[in-house]
Each structure stands twice: as C-alpha cells, then as structure tokens.
Image (tube, rainbow, N blue to C red):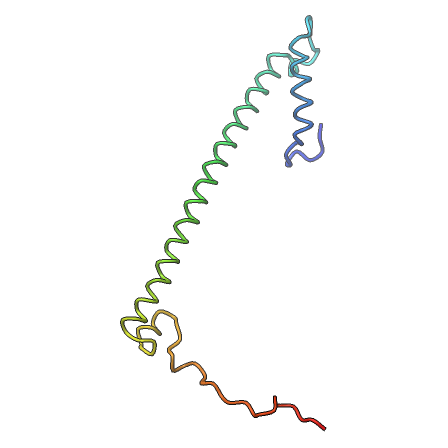
Length: 125
C-alpha cells in the first residue's frame, strides 16, 4: 500500500493500473485467496473510480464556467463604474462634491505645478 494516500496518483501509474486491470480480466481461473481482490470487486472499484473521475471533471468544468461568468460580471460592473465616474465629472464638474463622493480627487486637491529654476537645478563649477 502507498504511504501518502492523500495525493493524486500520477496519470502514468493509473494508465499502467488500467492495463493491468484489462489483463486481469483476461486471466482464466483467477481465484485469489483474499476475497477482497476478486475480479468482481476490482471491477466495482474500477467503475467507482471512473464515475468519481467523471463527476470531478464535470464539477471542474462547471466551476470553470462559473468563474468565467464571475470574471465577466466583475469587468462589466467595473467598466460601468468607470463610465459613471466620467458622467458624474461631466455633469457636476471636476471640482464637485459628487466627484469626491465617488472616491475621486477634486481638481482643486491636486498640487498646482511650480516652476523650476532655470539651468536645470544643478550648480556648475
């Protein structure tokens, strides 16, 4: 038995197990001493694994589709809010309280530009 049964089995190992299972079904007279390893019990485990993998694949596809729908909805909302900010700015002015209420800076809150001293600011010797 494996030591760490909480991680997924490598696909190459599962492929080898499937090939061995196919070969097992072709063995005539197989009668294990331990009844847990009969062909019928192994086939039931194989079928259960296939069903679980199918359900996991379908659930992953559904989750991926929902994640894509959420992403699209988030972008639609974000773009609508950007457009709304432009509309509020156009309607009320860039120095209005309405612009500030949307989390934007008023035009008067920005620092006014200052002139630099001529000569590039450095002293030459």
